[in-house]
Each structure stands twice: as structure tokens, then as C-alpha cells.
Length: 389
Image 1 (tube, rainbow, N blue to C red):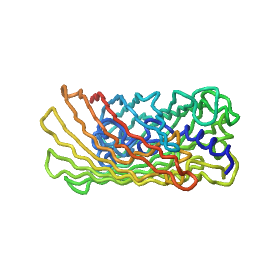
Image 2: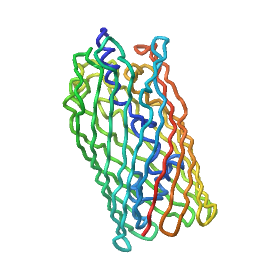
Image 3: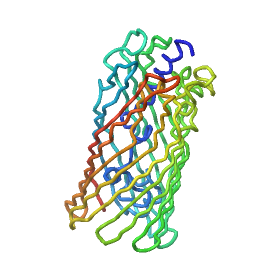
């Protein structure tokens, strides 16, 4: 590998450095209530963000509107050649979500969930070979999911969402690879999500969801860097879940998910791929497919107060031989511990809170990535308001 190639690879990593990146470029759960249960939600819809977790859940949550905001404080960086470099020049981010659902008749519901992925990374100085500006990048993705959900029988529901996505990307401080600061590049895309929910008994509910790859338009300003000529799609993912009520006031939930990162060339191609930058077989981030397991508990402490807690664990997606590409994309977190509550102000209005600690995780580089060790941890505090009508 020549001297230029590692520099370009480290620059490319800035594209996948979202501060929301706890499971790759995705959070541990969508919606404040799901966040408080470690993300467990496929068989336990609790608000109008449900379509982002399982479209069938919109047939269950009833008439409601939810609006939330999560404050995220990120701590990330990497040890390079024995020296630790902090990537925390910007470490506070705010991520909104929104959901609306309406019951059309006894069987059909229609609604929309809106969620976000990604934010960015920023250094207070140039990184790598001498450049004219400070290093950094910003990646933002917003997904709108118009949804129809249908009760096919008592206790059984299916749902379908059209995922319409927008993303924007900016990279700074990469003049040393012949790319001046380009500013933001934008792209739109689309995908499909399917879901099912079914009650086996009064105590047990199962759920399953499938989300296709969201095919995004090419990021033309960065087509000479990203494999696939500027490809940066949102990956296919699917999962199953179970919810169990051992008592009328206690609900346990668990999910298992699979995220297909390797199917996206710019993300899954190896650091040492033989092709030129931007080619279909060009270098990528080298991420592996990911298995995610989530468990949570919800306790109705009173008529007005619910308490919840949860834990999520994702398999490591960055192999030790691929850490060079993740110099600016330390998407290393695996373990998340969360707690939350719902306080009902009256029959129609509720307040929700959730706190999540994403524990520090480091990947020690080896082989072609020897000496580059990225790490990342987070605090997340989310709040939302829900209205039923």
C-alpha cells in the first residue's frame, strides 16, 4: 500500500462518523420509550414512532401523536502510533423524532414515523499530512415512513411502510488527497419495510420486521472517494421480537436483529480492496454484518407512572484489520444500558424520559491497521410528549 492510500482511507472514514452511531450509523432504538427499554420494541409498540421499529405496531398504538428530542454527548477518538487524538471538538448533538397515527376503522390504521441517523465528527486541527483546514465531516440521514397497518384478525396485524430518505454529507480538511472542501452533497432514496405482530395469548406477543436496503442517490461530489461511485445506502435489516406480561403491571420484551452492513460497497468493502477509490471494488470501511440483541422491562408503578429499563448488545462491526478506515469513524460501541419513565399528566397527555449510557469500546488495530485504535462512548438523554385522541 503506498503512502497516499492510508491517508485517503483515513479521510474516507469521516463519512461514517455519526455521533448517533451506536450500532453502526443507527441508534440502539427509535423513540424515547423504546430507548428506555434498550431498544426492545419489535413486539412492543408504545408510540407513533412504532413504524420505525415494526410497521405492524401502528395497528396497535391507536390515535396518537408523539414528538421527541434526544440530547447526545459523544466521546470518541483514536490512538494512532501511541498518541491519543480526541475527535470531540463538537460533542453535543440533538436528534428529533416524530410520529402520527390515526385509526381509520376497526381494522385499518394510517400514520407516519420520522427518525434520524448520524451527525458527524470534528477536529480542532488538521489530521494526517499537512492540509489547509481542520479535519471533520458531517453525515445526516432522515427517514420518513408513511405507513398502513391492518388487523387481519383479533390479535394479528400486518404493516407496510414506504421509507423515503434524505441524506447530506460534508467533508473538510482533505486537501492533501486532491479534494478541496466541497461543502454539502445531498441525496434522496427509498426503501420498503414490512412487519407482523401476533398475540399467542393474553400474556405473549410475537413480532417480526423486515426493512429493505434504502437505495440512496449517488453523492457525486465524493464519487472519487466512496466505493460504488459515491454510494452510501442505508442497509437492509430484519429482526424478531417477543413481549411477555407475567403480571398485569409488568411487561418484558426482547429483540434479535441482523444488519447487513457488508452489502453496501462503500461500507462493506475491505480496506485492502484492489480497485481504485470510487470503483465498485474500491476500498471501503470493512464493516461486518451485525447481530443486535435487546432486552427491556416496563413496570406500571401506578395509574400515572411507568418505569422502564433495558440493555442492548451489538456484535463488533469493525474487524481489527480494518481500523485505519475508521480513524474518523469510531463506530465501536457495543453495550448500552438504559432507563426511562412515562408520566401521564391526564388521560390524553404524557411525558416520557429516557437515559442511555453507551459504554466505552476500543478496537485494537492489527495487520494493515496496526497502531490505529479507535474508541467511542456516549451519554444520551431523551424526552418526548405524547398525545392520544
